[in-house]
Length: 183
Image (cartoon, rainbow, N blue to C red; front, side):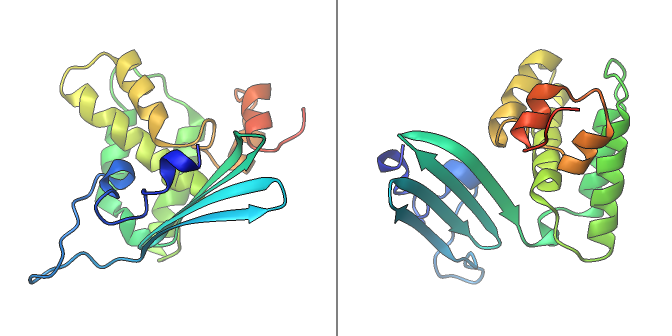
C-alpha cells in the first residue's frame, strides 16, 4: 500500500486524488504545497499527503490501513452556492429525507458563513453528495451514483461523529467506524 502511493504528492501525479490539473509558471500557476511523507514509528507506518490546504493521513499496521483522516483547512474549498447545490440534490424526488443531512448542511453553511474550516466529516459529506449529484443529473441510477460517491471518502466518515451519535438510524457499523461505543 505504501509503495503504491509514494507518488501521490508529486505535481505530475496529484490529479489521481484531487482531480485537478497543475499549472507550472504562466499567469496563474497552481499555488501549492505538495508532498508525500512516509512516517515510520516502530512497526506502525503512516502515509501523509499534503496538497495546498488539505491533508490526508493514513495509518497502517501489519500491511493494512487502520485509519484514514482527511482534513481540509480552507473553507474556500466549498462555497455557499455549493451548499445550495447539495441541498437541492438531497431534495430530489425519490431520495428519502434524512434529518442528519439537514444538520450537516446547517453546520457546513454556518462554517462557511463564519469563515471556519470544515471538519473532516463535513468536507467528506460535501464531497460525497457533490460526487453523487453530477451523475444523477446525467441520468445515472441512484445506486450506481451512490456507489461511486462512496469511493471519494473514507468509509463511514461523511458525517460528524456527534451527528452519528445523535441519530439512532446510524447503526453499530457507523458507530464503530467513528470510534463511538455501543448505544
